[in-house]
Image (cartoon, rainbow, N blue to C red; front, side):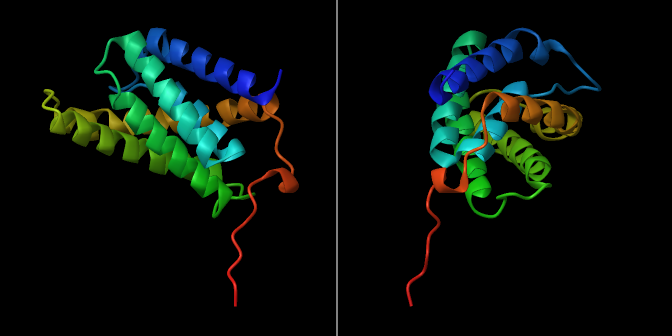
Length: 173
């Protein structure tokens, strides 16, 4: 299976599992975000453009599956995919701690940005619930699931060779 088809299948299955099973498993008040973990794995392996496009379509699919406000999750996951991909292309390249650091930072940023965006569009949302009660248990679950999800992403998408990656920026002078 080629890369775009594998990415599409991974995003579709992760969104379907997230909407039907994973979101309903409550652990100390929080739930894991399997779709976000798959997106982080894809973005770290394939870069910012792939991360942003996969994040947008993953969020749009999740919005449709959960009947949430259309486009909110798409915007949040597109930004998360883009910035995770940029981290993987620059600072996080070939570092062992990059996936776990990305999970921590992106999980917190998605929660904060999601709360802010829902607040701005006038939806009723509790800051205490969104930022304190569910964030820490969800972050812990994301960290527990990160290694198996990233191993699966590595297995399904072969790592790119250095020559296949985006050329690094070189400063003149």
